[in-house]
Amino acid sequence: MYAGHFAAGLAMKATAPRTPTWPLLLGVGFLDVLFGVFVVAGVEHVRLTPGHAPGFSLDFIDWSHSLVMSAVWGVVYALAFVRRGAAVAAWCWAAVFSHFVLDLLMHPGDLAVSPHSEAHVGLGLWTRWPTGWWYFELAFVALCGAYYIVRARRDGTFGGHAWWVVGIVLALHVTNSPWLSPTG
Image 1 (cartoon, one colour):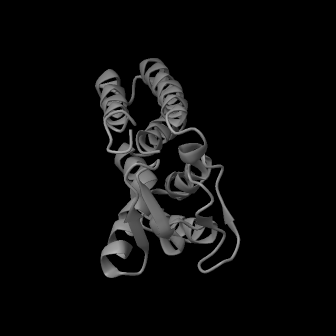
Image 2 (cartoon, rainbow, N blue to C red; image 1 turned 90 degrees about the horizontal axis):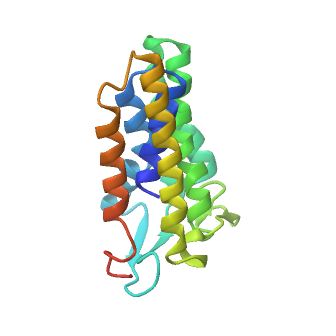
């Protein structure tokens, strides 16, 4: 779920309009930024699996994507925004932690409870529903996008380009379709 993370960030913005948009959108992707750094550093491990959805195997992602570390990274991220107020910091934590919650739906049991834990979770929509996951995420993006647009129009204090922003998130989702990927 890539576009879905950004859609969740937009829904959070619509719910908490006083929270700046950029920390929410960066927050929902923060775990993936850490993942990229950790893979390059050799701390986490991934391998390509052409022909098998989702096209890669996340062999060890416990430091960036485990339940416990998602909560910890959320605290670390939120601390950077404490000066903006407790509510903003709390929403920044929620943005980071939402990544784990949404990944729980997609990942096939590769999300550890804590680093090096034997217990792993994930409902596995990517593997159980090799093309259907895309429609599930499309519905999620559409619902979050509609919520963002409606709230932006009603509130009038954010989302001056709401249709464009939602369109970009939808375009991101379309480019991540199983039909355009090497595994499709």
